[in-house]
Amino acid sequence: MCSILGSLSRKALLGTIPLRCTILAQRLASSATPDECSQPAEFYDIIIAGGGMVGTTLACSLGKNLRLADRRILVLEAASGFKQPSMDTYSNRVSAISKGTHRLMKTVGAWPQIEATRVKPVLKMQVWDACSDALITFNYDDMAENIAWIVENDVLLASVYRQLEQVKNVEIRYSSKIEGCKLIRDGVDMSTVQLSNGDRLKCELLVGADGYNSLVRRSMGVDNFTLAYNQMGVVATLKLAEGISNNVTAWQRFLPTGPIALLPLSDDLSSMVWSTSVSEAKRLLQLDGISFVAAVNEAFNKRYPRNNLLDDIMKNVHSLVSSTTGQRLESAPVVEAVIEKSRAAFPLGLGHTSTYAGQGVCLIGDAAHRVHPLAGQGVNLGFGDVQCLTDILAESNYAGLGVNNLAQLLKYERQRLKHNVPVLLTTHGLQRLYTTDFPPLVGLRSVGLTITNALPPVKKFLMNYAMS
Ligand SMILES: Cc1cc2nc3c(=O)[nH]c(=O)nc-3n(C[C@H](O)[C@H](O)[C@H](O)COP(=O)(O)OP(=O)(O)OC[C@H]3O[C@@H](n4cnc5c(N)ncnc54)[C@H](O)[C@@H]3O)c2cc1C
Image 1 (cartoon, rainbow, N blue to C red):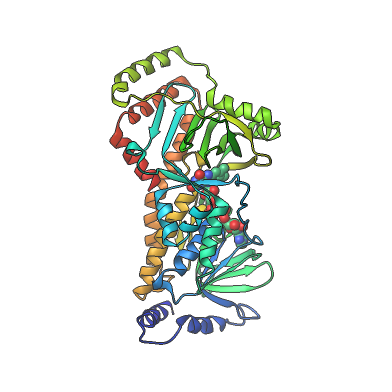
Image 2 (cartoon, rainbow, N blue to C red):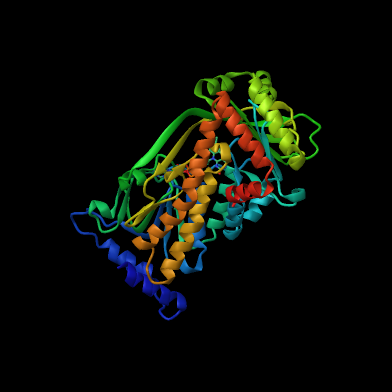
């Protein structure tokens, strides 16, 4: 059926057949066999399970693509709605977004509203090791270009949603928890979802954007590698002491217990992500404001015990490369206060599914891959999936192959695996390499970091890859 619909849809787009193929599809799909159900299921061409940042952006990106204009798309989200950004308070959930995400936000038309609401460009990044003098800095020449943007998740979601409201072929249903999925592998003719309110819906393509506990992924019966880091990411909004003239640097210090990062939000506010052991995270959440601020300032400045031999080696490495870099460690800004009620903690883990696509189904975002936030890559990988899936489905639909062609879905899988797996492995490797103060490993990582810092082409390559 899909190829018939695909070719019809192409002709309809070209204006030769004044027919909406989705109407035909709906009729065909609604004639469910009696053993499947007692009442016919509603039909959509594409159903997106999960209306988080990634699922909502996919809906907008597909809906705005002219080559998919004949397709009816539905987003099902369990929550009753999304949080509107507060004009007075910054949210404690923020993302460092890459150039690729910036481009996608422009393509779906959300960027002007993000900019009009709140966003802070990052022009420089300093990453350093608490157990040695190793550091690396990233910035484009003369800070002429942004290396990332810090956006509150609520601001991004609200801006994409505003665009979605204007897209006629996309519908979003809140308070719609999916309770079960049946896929073609289970013997049904089309992907079918069952909502907790009893409604049944069918589609040609079911996209799982339902986060790291994805029900769609579990219904696919695919292997999913998971690893709990036994760490939590403590987040908070922090007020910086006066004297910062230009808050445009992202700071990250690797402590033996995990990294602490400070991301600029405004001239005098920054967002913190402190990855640490579960017990330490709980302690940090319990501290009164003054003690918490003292703990944060200590984390950025405390001198940890050093190994003398390692210090000597690093002095030599530094003297060898200092003429190339001429860089010195800069101090992170002093934190003055924590914004009330902005502290929270989230469990951190690694996850990767063996398969992103199957007959009539595919996965995007955290449903397919979950990474440690130390490299700020999680949602950026998800947005990369969105761009890739949009391109492939649009091309496939235009070519008359429809939106559930397995070969096309596997092409999506291949392209994304090629990008996502190296990022996952690197992030995991860094997490492991830095959560130790074992001198040989500290030595290895410190020499590596210092030499990388002295090689501008390598740094530029890393920066472009991570932020593309
Ligand atoms: C502390 C921390 C800091 C981070 N910082 C960064 C950063 O700087 N940069 C970055 O790129 N990434 C960052 N990340 C990662 C990023 O937050 C995630 O990758 C991103 O939120 C995943 O988005 P998603 O839409 O794929 O999944 P989710 O945000 O999990 O959304 C899934 C949606 O599906 C819905 N859902 C689930 N099950 C069902 C169901 N059965 N029926 C209907 N709906 C359902 C949920 O309600 C939810 O809305 C960070 C993560 C953490 C924990």
